[in-house]
Image (tube, rainbow, N blue to C red; front, side):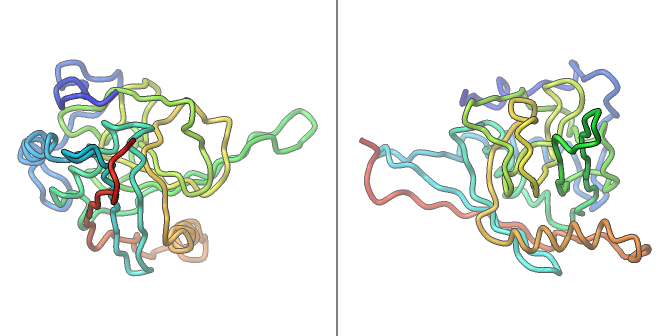
Length: 233
């Protein structure tokens, strides 16, 4: 449900079990208190419908040394997570952030058959380490679910811990169809261009022969919006 910033977050005085203390600054040098202030101030300015009732589409472009990734917001699935992601982009949070973790897992039944698979690329850890308990920025987002949110190739969602209300700055790009995760993680966007770039980043990150290679960096991240040509009926 679309909400004001204060209603969309889990505040610092209600930390998840086992969560790391939010850092004073990101590893890129961004003061976290300043970031939270900017997100709160920008929150109401990020709209998914204009004054005439026309849907507003948002696209985020992330440039890396391996190419660009274009991400289209899906606010009907998780409006607060979509708005928060856009607010972080507009604040400059993701500039200089790393693709810091990959997840490659297979579930196997008693007969040795693979029954489920997860392959995803993760980024946005404030310390650049990809720690699962790190990602809070002095707050976390309340969990959002939608029956149409499917874990399919190219979907973008919020990394979370065991508790539901633990998503914040870290995000993932799914590179496998993983329907067994439906309802568990929050999906708020999808890659519309540059899926090959995401796969190249994952290959470089998982290549055992590439030990010592620096992580792929998000060199720039920008957000652009466009209203539909006709109002919603």
